[in-house]
Length: 111
Image (cartoon, rainbow, N blue to C red; front, top):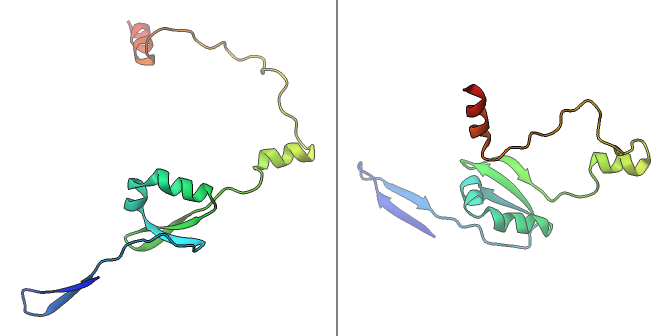
């Protein structure tokens, strides 16, 4: 949709309105504002295999793509190059058990 309006000097200024319509394209463009407003919808699309190019002020800044394959950790485990830990490392302090919030605990220690 296009429209024109008169500028203060009498010239015509044309403005254009575009909307992002879902297509079967592998890569679509989406602005950051639109992404923030509908993040969960875009995440679902990406999970389904769709890719988005993210723009800020009309300029591409990032790409949102589905995660494929194994992580580096999973690859190294599968290759037998590393092994997961079998026990908790020694020398670590036991977790602090407390009721209330961390702020309350810090406040009590400062008194």
